[in-house]
Image 1: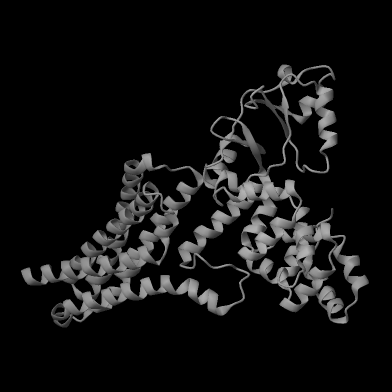
Image 2 (image 1 turned 90 degrees about the horizontal axis):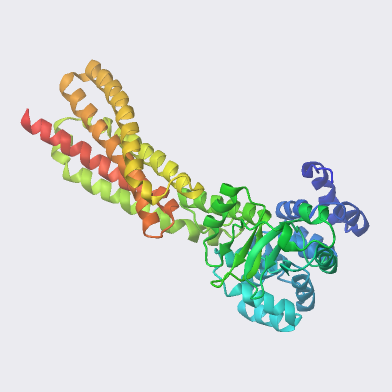
Length: 449
């Protein structure tokens, strides 16, 4: 399939929607990949989006629906008759169907599940029992498991039998008489083996299986570490209950990356495609309130040093530098640690090693900027205030770096998302501490001179 430039065809689609030219729209849309249609729907106005989606055949509509973000899904299914919604869910893979049903209002979800085919309904309900962000929550129940005594011909016949049910088949999972996972067979090895060969003779016993309750970030790290394209999900008895493929992991990485960036921006509950200003405002307000209250505390601290500020007006001129350098240093350290934790390059066992590394970096940075500030202020106002500022900046930068590194590591140890550490919380905290350190040192020096 040739890559499509959506910027070229989007104006035509909008024009044909306005003209209600169904034939021209279908002529364009039916040749596109579901992911391209998803992008087009995201860029259309609500009314245009609903009209275009209503034209899609059921099979294509179900594939597109599984690609859409939650706010757009809510809009699209708003006016869909229940019978059509059931047909769309029935045609999805079990993991996509479970994700969609989980987003539906409870009364609609119950109605859909009750009217679906029993097998499909049971599969979706089974997946809904798992935590959303766990291996069980992202796995699919469509897989092929064969006994170790099965022959190559029997296995190929099974693949043919299930060809319409299973997409992206990479491995055949091999089980013993108790249905416990004992090995796997690559499709290439299966095709190249002779028909009478048993799976026991050609299977690979080195399997990277995951437990159903494993966090999806840990699963993603496992895929990255061993370059996996598919992995079986097993229960406590090592019985296979599902599989995860690399396309699921790509979705996890995107989701976790977006979530971490949202935390860092102070908008953790915000959906990019959400159109309601009220909902977006409600998601951002708590984090802005943290910053607001923190800066009020900083203002209170400043008021407690009123005498010091009146004694030397130049003290106030450099408050922005102290706050900015402390906040930026803390953010740098926290973002690096959060990224390292997310990618598996840093673990909580590395706490002391990581802190020492950040301290060494901050020592070098603080020496450079303290020296630079000393030189500037010395030429501007003389040696006394140059010493005060350079010492203050040295302490603030080093303190911020240690806090920026230790907070996400502490959050990780407490099973709290480390990305929270890079939210406005840590920036505001460093502002407060930076002002306190700066004015305390200034006051002490002025009292001694």
